Image 1 (spheres, rainbow, N blue to C red):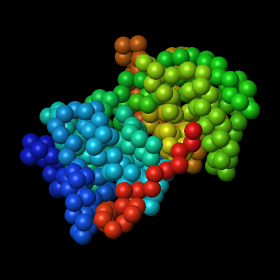
Image 2 (image 1 turned 180 degrees about the horizontal axis):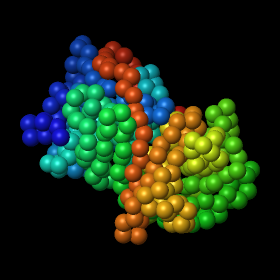
Image 3 (image 1 turned 30 degrees about the vertical axis):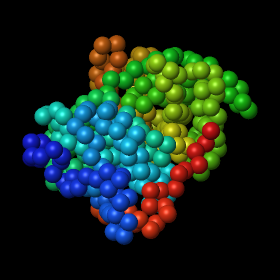
Length: 345
């Protein structure tokens, strides 16, 4: 566990916390934010370890609300152009409320905020290990959707015990313009997914076409009032097709993320949602390994245990730290807080 849990109001590597007013008031002095960059199966994660605003001492859900309402500049600065990219997921490390947790984490992307992010959590664990804040073995990370158990092994692989996952709707028929009827399941794996199986071979060279297909499906879901619990929008669409090789994977997916970009990794929350559907259909036994291949050919291994009419998934993958960077917030830069992306309807 982190030695810094009981030392001070924030994690020891979070050296400075500032408000947006504080940053803006220093008209001639650039400020900076230290981030650790990594990728998990090809999907980038940018973790703030110094210079984030003070989000208070509540749970991660309340701190996420504070970040969204009072300091959204941090998100746009980090994951939109000119510093970031539309496929990047960001995270802020926070001191946890729980004395058993190694850290808290709040995730975001170019479109907004995420309750949980599988590939991002693997990147957070790799970041904590890089900083020397955790050892090998089991740890807990607080997120806005609950406490997540993680394991770091000697190879550098990370396993994430995700939040309770389940299928909400089965064989939902969606009428999609220019495509006709598309049938799939609505499932929760930390984010809301519409998952549809296809016999189509999913290739990286066909990303433009796959993006248009999944965007049309997502728009049709919204127009036809198909949602997650309590009217929550379904902001992820997952196509699941044959693997590139049955010797290395059970399936290959293409996942549309909220900002209109596709997930380069096999998607941790998407794999969790798929496991929930497989379990509900009796197609995957408790403890059996499911090997999920991404559109770029990387693999997550998933398994689950049953719990209260749902499942608790465990997703395993590897992240690689590829940057230890100090980002400069220059008051003279008109795009110091990023360029708002042009998101699809």
